[in-house]
Image (cartoon, rainbow, N blue to C red; front, side, top):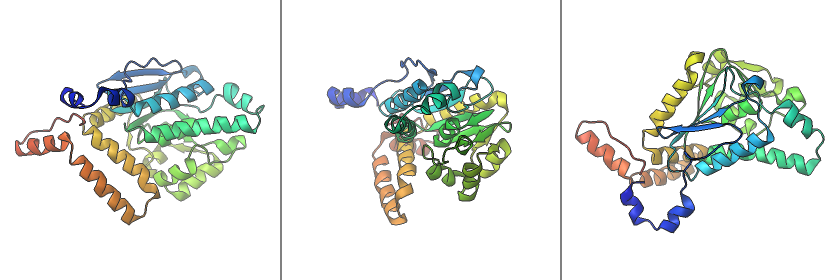
Length: 287
């Protein structure tokens, strides 16, 4: 939103629906913003970056905040060291869970599901930078991202059945088949085996493959490219990609007609037209 736009909008409306995220102080992972790209780094490398009750909740809350943030236009999720994320911490999550009753267990599983919902509902495209171990909830975070940059040495495992649980965790049975196909997803969810980096590339789980030392840089470069595009329109695209899973083709075409008409009202659409006429690249501002 430009300063001219802000002057036309009631400040009370902006105050209730806009916030900043660059100044957010993360407690249970690293968070930084550069060039309108926010980077979440799971930073417990000595344990292969496992999640805890605290980090689950904070990730959920940060992605919920990003829904209203106007200073961040794309997100990268990465792991510190040579691994992405080993899933829920065995000692800090799995151990305590076996002592809980049903109400508290449901509280936990709903919290983890709410993280995926928040990732899917924030308008910023999310790019996962995947190297090394990407397992359990870590594999889910990678799956819930919009794009994935990976390495051939990575190992992605939806290993829930290895600990006596169903593969239907945090939306896996709905989302994974749409990414790699029903048969391949079924194999991974029934067996809990690792998907190699080569398989992830061939099956379309990874959008790009690069050297381990370049995975974060390449993911941030892709996120920066998206952040420099028509970000309002990108947010609409993300919304439609998510919503159209439940639509028939006629309903989807009508929904896209309405969405595209809305995008045609933006200044970015006008900027793109004038740039084309003037034979130059457009500079998008997200409004």
